[in-house]
Length: 229
Image (cartoon, rainbow, N blue to C red; front, side):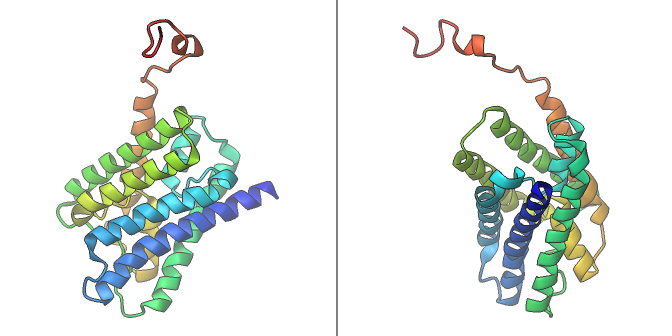
């Protein structure tokens, strides 16, 4: 029963992110740019922040197969539920894209991510963007930030990266976010890029994090720390 609650939370959180984020793209395309690129970026960032605040206490707020795979690979998340987490994330994303298809039947792409330039350029962008996002996620986990601070920081990273890199590569950073509009719209071009690059970037971020010195309780109490007499 507890696992079911977690899976429902992962479904709901991924649904909200994809529905709000790619929904903003669909509205912008349907109504002649009314949302604007800045608005789309903000929609993704706010959707991520809100989903974390609503559901982190239930499932840990992965909402992203790249995050689940990375935390599992580096033994920060149990192997057994990881597969079901990813299925729940994909199901939530597909449900969101399916609903958007009903709402915007004339929209061809439904927010699908496609490279604006070369495949190599977009692969590098997606790799680096997800690396930075995963680095922020690992940082807030390591430093045990409050939920509000964690959600805000992660949402800001998503929104900022979507703003400056979206026109180049789509700024997916999330295989589920790219898989669902590709499935529902039938545009599979370059989908492999948005499945492989985010996972590779997230794994590399966790690998780098292994080499960051960890503060110990003794170090935190050591004399000479700023604020000591």
